[in-house]
Amino acid sequence: MTVHSEHDLREALRAIESTLAKCEKALTSLKPGTAQHTLLTRRIAAFAIAIELLKERLGE
Image (cartoon, rainbow, N blue to C red; front, side, top):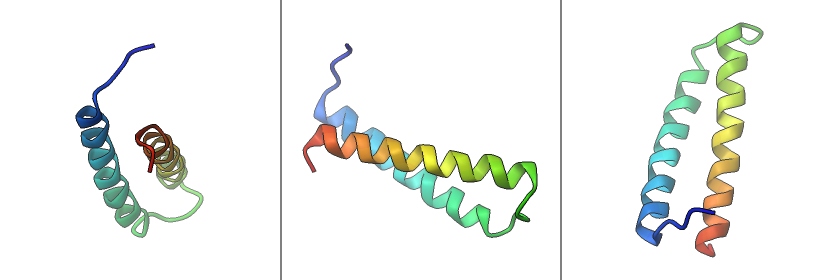
């Protein structure tokens, strides 16, 4: 297993949270049922999981 520094994990968390916010904003402009909407919805869910795992790893 690769060991990452706390700094690396915090930077990753910041980047993912920023990207998640942008995706959530973009989702409002997409029509439900379209491929783009479905893909973005799944991407948002994946980012939420990544954020949760990073926070766990950081002890937050």
